Image (cartoon, rainbow, N blue to C red; front, side):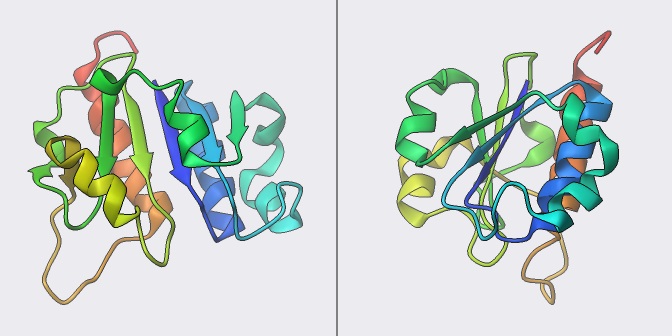
Amino acid sequence: MKVVLVEPEIPQNTGNIGRLCVATGVSLIIVGPTGFILNDKKLKRAGMDYWKHLDFTFYPTFEEARAVFDQNDIFLFSPSGKNIYTKGRYSKESILIFGKESMGLDKNILQEFEEKTYFIPMKKEARSLNLANSVAIVLYEALRQIENW
């Protein structure tokens, strides 16, 4: 299983997600450009000493990253997603894709993969959830569905 962050902007979120990935044994893919440098102190601090244990890959663009994804295993997350995240049928090969904090995933990406888009329900007053929280919610649902993770 892999978590993909497309153009993350806040190093603390990415650091927390990296730590979550280590704790769950999941790989992290970061797609650029990022809103920070990858050796940012805030990134490392949020990830604590877990970062050295992280299975991590960086791709400069989404096009480069998607070339290695099995299109059958992708799940894209957005407040405008078509399906509730609990309806996803996750496997050990699932690729969980999240967009940047300020804008989410590019509209063209969401349109191209419309049937593979998912949302986390929330009250109308909220625009979005924190990225690290969203990843944790979805990742633990995906892992719950996999026996012996």
